[in-house]
Amino acid sequence: MLQLNCPWCGPRDETEYHYGGQAHVPYPEDPSALADEEWAEYLFFRDNPKGPFAERWVHSVGCRRWFNVVRDTRTYEVLAVYTNTEPRPDLGMGVAAGGQR
Amino acid sequence: MAKQLPEHPAWLWRDPNPKSSYDAIVIGGGGHGLATAYYLARNHGLTNIAVLEKGWLAGGNMARNTTIIRSNYLWDESAAIYEYALKLWELLPAELDYDFLFSQRGVLNLAHTLQDVRDSVRRVEANRLNRVDAEWLEPDEVAKVCPIINVSPELRYPVLGATFQPRAGIAKHDHVAWAFARACDAMGVDIIQHCEVTGFVKDGNRVVGVDTTRGRINAGLVGLVAAGHSSVLAEKAGFRLPVQSHPLQALVSELYEPVHPTVVMSNYVHVYVSQAHKGELVMGAGVDAYNGYGQRGSFHVIERQMAAAIELFPIFARAHLLRTWGGIVDVTPDASPIIGATPVENLYVNCGWGTGGFKATPSAGWVMAHTMATGEPHELNRPFGLERFTTGALIDEHGAAGVAH
Image (cartoon, rainbow over all chains, first blue to last red; front, side, top):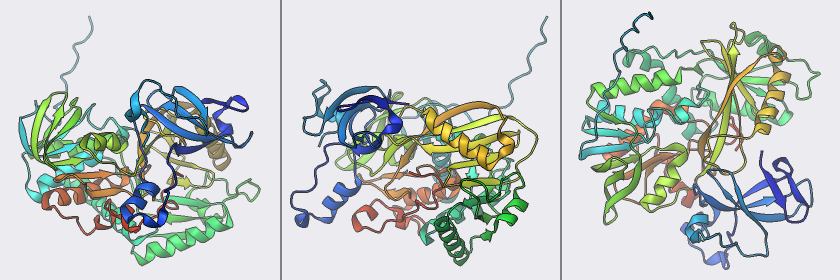
């Protein structure tokens, strides 16, 4: 089981959280202007890297707030935890490593 | 002095070095990859082909699944492709001349809530309209099919009934892979293990070969059949797939006398159990919620699954767990597979089977081979192309997929 360090509540077991998938996927600025391919991209296509991945978690049974985690999907090691208002930390892996688009 | 060891039995397939060029390459030496190569040779006469496997033959999800075979899916498109697979399963032991212990012992899909009952009865009716054998059983009938299930109304999640597909069952997964591999080899297919694809060679937007850990191999056609690693390879080829990779766990008990006559699945309390021919109870869990490639899952997922198993099968309470393991499943947004063309010319993909690809091994191979050989989808996989995520014609099988994801 993972242990994640909620930015507001501290370290808790994974079972207190729910997973939210890839982080930093903004809602389209002008949805009505999107082509079908762009809608498909927004709705269904997410990065799926083998390595560091910036992802969202929510502390469902605690403060119920969302935050971001960079986690290695090979080793499951948590590399960084940061709040929604903070930028993705530069872990020296470049943009491609974490799938920020 | 120790007795001399017996000779190794005859190898079922050669262990060739890769040639510099093939007419077609299949990436992935699991069940689907081997079935694709088999039908490329058998149905389309393509025998100058190779299967490239980064590890050992059928050592990925093929070695890790719970071997359940059934075709009781809700939508017409799914029922068609899974039922085609089941019909092929019924023919394959004779055709491949290999007894891989295909046992049509039936599958029960339990219902535990009123909504479960409604959904299940609807699925039975949909199955019947698609000529898939399906029955709705009341709790006392469930107990007749599988006497070790606790159908007491006192349970926290009582069994309110079940769907039953008598033609469903299990097969010995390793033997299925070996049977396909032997048949492929006999037709001249090169099965190349320990050969990882590291990149794609392209001429403009057309794939013309692959780079591997054993050198460059040219090919006019490439099929990507890599399950959990599909999106890693797709990225190397320059496109994205709408799949997310998750760890999925399974486990077996010690060997026991035959006590479990069928296959039981429960979506709601989340466990699925059969008993292998050797005697192990084979059980599957849910996926871990997060993306992962670690081929291991979380203990709390198994703990929850065991709680469900013991409530449903009190006889298991003292069973000893022997092994647990994890595989990496590639999950799509609609819990249906992706089989067809990719944005790269002459590169085709079969992926996204998520938690339930084993049962579809023969038909997935059949339609993938057709698609690669003719450049056009087979009628069975036409609805399962990548374009459905743009058109919106999704095939939502979360209800019938068996494992929540």
